[in-house]
Length: 259
Image 1 (cartoon, rainbow, N blue to C red):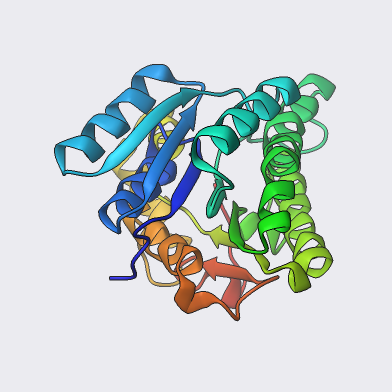
Image 2: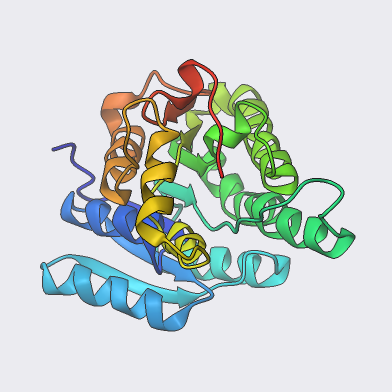
C-alpha cells in the first residue's frame, strides 16, 4: 500500500460514502486525517472507525460554502500542524432534473456546494502549500464532469466546473510543487444513490437498472474510489497533475446514461 506516513490530510465530506472511505484509507496509510463535514454524527463515526483501527484523526464541523469558516480552519491547522500535505475536496451534493425542472434555487444550491465549496476550501489551504512547495490537491468530480448526462443539468454543470478548476489550478501551480488532480467516478453505492433507490416501488429492479448503466454491469464501492485517491495523495504520483481520472466501469468509454 502507498504510504502517507507523516502527512496531514484534510478530507471534506468525510462523514459518509466516498469521503469516509478516503479518510479511513488515508489513516490506514499513516496520515493524520482531518475529517470535515456538516454532518457531525457521520463525521464522528468516521474518526471513531479510524481510531478503532489505530489511526490518527480529528473531526471538524465545516460548511464548505462558508468562506470565513474555511479560512479560520486553514489558519488553525497551519498553526497547529503546518501546511497540508493533502487536500481532498470531496464534499458535494446531487440533483436530478433538466433545465426546465431545475429552479434557480436548485441551481444556486448545487453550484454553491459543488463549485463555490471547492473554491472556498482550496483558496484557504492552497497558499501555504504553494509557499512550502509541495502538496497534493484531489478534487472529486464525476463522469458527469466529462460528458453530458440526461436529467442532470445542474449537477453535470457543477462537475464540469470542477474538472475545469482542476486543470487551471494544475497549470497555475505546476512549478510550485503542488499537484492538482480530480477523480471522476461513475455511479457509486453512496447514501445519495441509496436514497434514489428508495424512491422506486421496485428497489431491486431499480438497482439492476442503475448497475446496467456501467459497461461492466455494476456500481463502484466507495473503497474503490478511495484507492485512486490514495495513489494521487502519495509521492509515487509525483509526475501526475492536471489529470481527470474516469473511474466509472467503462461508462465514459462509450455512450452511457443515468436514471
